[in-house]
Image 1 (cartoon, helix red, strand yellow):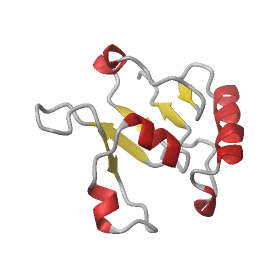
Image 2 (cartoon, helix red, strand yellow):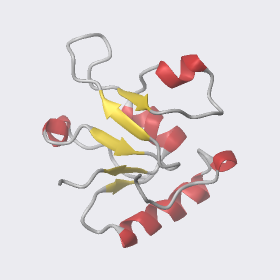
Image 3 (cartoon, one colour):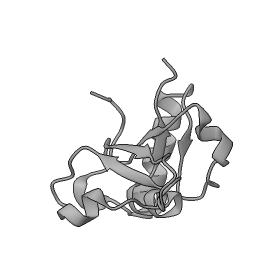
Length: 110
């Protein structure tokens, strides 16, 4: 289980909550990168070694790397009870992921 500060379920996407959680994660995990709502998306080359991020609620997302139409987009790995099936399986861009479910934190390198 990944232990990170999280957003309350009904606060997902709330900018003030996202900024607070961003700062808490950066303080508690200085060896990991966390992107908040005001941060620029990482360059594609950044993901050559890292394919997962954890969202503001602690859920895991994977970057799609196949040569299909959704290459480079993100898909939920896990289960968000409040989302309908279509939302759970639909790939999203980095910007949409960060805006809706951020902050985003990469996983430890080990």
